[in-house]
Amino acid sequence: MSGDGAPAVVIRGAVATDLPELRRVYREASLGNAGDAPMLLARPELLVLAGEGVAEGRTRVAVPGRDPRAPVLGFATSAVAADGEPELEDLFVDPRWQRRGIARLLVLDAARSVRETGHRRLWVTGNPHALGFYRAVGFLGDDAVATLLGEGLRLHLDVS
Image 1 (cartoon, rainbow, N blue to C red):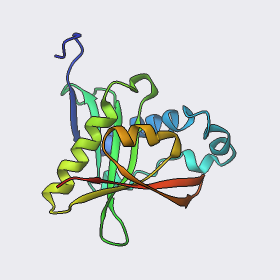
Image 2: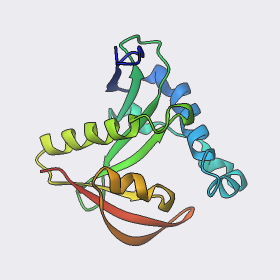
Image 3: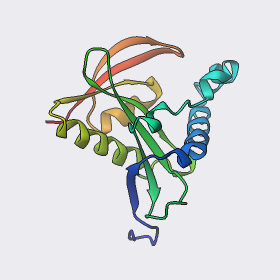
């Protein structure tokens, strides 16, 4: 239990039965950003999480406690980019649980995994709206890159 009586957050590997919750969190978190919502609503196919990362063992979920039926609070998916470097592909938190450290825990979990594989950096193409968060958890860089939703930022986190 945490100090406020809420169960501790547990990070675990996602399983197929998590997909409905992952899709809900993905959609709600994506539409929760007023700056992106109009573009996403105009392209509803971008609001559908395919879930390949779950089947491939690359998605980690944050849940309250160890109950396997607990709702998903957030999730992160890692991938290996074309250049062989580890990349944070997805990072989404249920809007009702944002600003409670869930995303930070998911980034720390991804950084630990990257470090264990011998890599020194974790990369992300971040939404400019989330730049403050990425800076707060230690990501560096600010190279602009094109994404499906417009300009993104190419950032890295040193994990060594």
